[in-house]
Each structure stands twice: as structure tokens, then as C-alpha cells.
Length: 100
Image: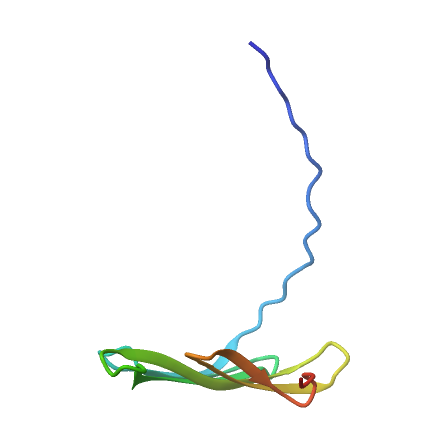
């Protein structure tokens, strides 16, 4: 029988700062559709809508998500990302995101 002992050094963890949610609004229906909005204490905002649309052959529905979020980068610049997630995948756009 062999006994193996392993000792590892503590991993570096950056201190975390609590960021409160200042505003939160969320509405959901029984089908899974929703509307969400929140604003956090660091100025980050998020809005998102999830809606059901018929799939291509009309036999079922798929949830499509559309939204945007705005945040301030460590250097102080504010960025906004708009996005859609649907049958064609996730697509994000913003002034800072390169376009193909």
C-alpha cells in the first residue's frame, strides 16, 4: 500500500468587492417568456427580453433572447453590447466589437 501526500500552495484570489443591485425588474409568464432589467451599483445595466417564436417548420416554439448591457471598463470607458440569441446563434454588436 502506498500513501501519497499532496500539498499545494493557496491559489491567488483577487479581493472581491460587493456590488449591490440598485434596481431589478423581472416579469415572466407561464410559457417561459420574460423581461428583465437591472442596474448595479457600479453603473452596469442589463436589459433582456425572451420571447417564444414558432420554429421553422411550425411544429414547436423556440425562445429568442434579445438584450443589451452597458458597463464601465477599468480605464473608465463605457461600453454597450447589444445581442440576439436565436436559431442562428449568438450575435453581439457594439462600437468596440470588430465586424467581419
